[in-house]
Amino acid sequence: MEQLQKNLDQIINSFEKNIIEKTLKDTHGNQSKAAKLLGISKRKIQYKIKKYNIDFILIKRQNPDTSDNLTKWYNLSSEKNQTTSPNIGHFLLP
Image 1 (cartoon, one colour):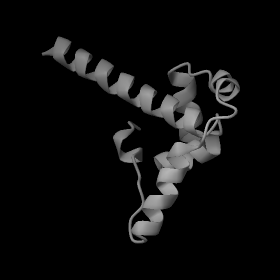
Image 2 (image 1 turned 90 degrees about the vertical axis):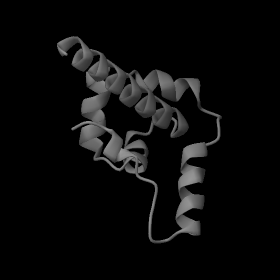
Image 3 (image 1 turned 45 degrees about the horizontal axis):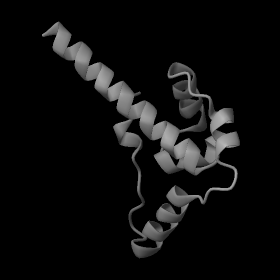
Image 4 (image 1 turned 180 degrees about the vertical axis):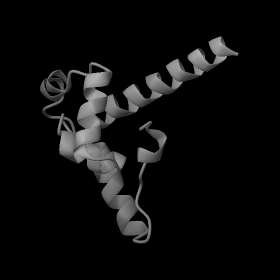
């Protein structure tokens, strides 16, 4: 049972790290914008970046000319349904 919990924690941490990295890539390393899109505070994303050893500056340098797809998706979703906005922050662990 303990091993199962450990495996589950590893899967959740991997998912969380990947979603943060993807969001940072889509926002060109902008932590404030990424945090807003994830529905968490800037302080929380900074904590997670440190926890998972994510090099957001490298991400920013690697993606200077790519389109901001996540922000575009967020804006389109908000226009379609003003009552709800995408918020994946509830998937992130405290």
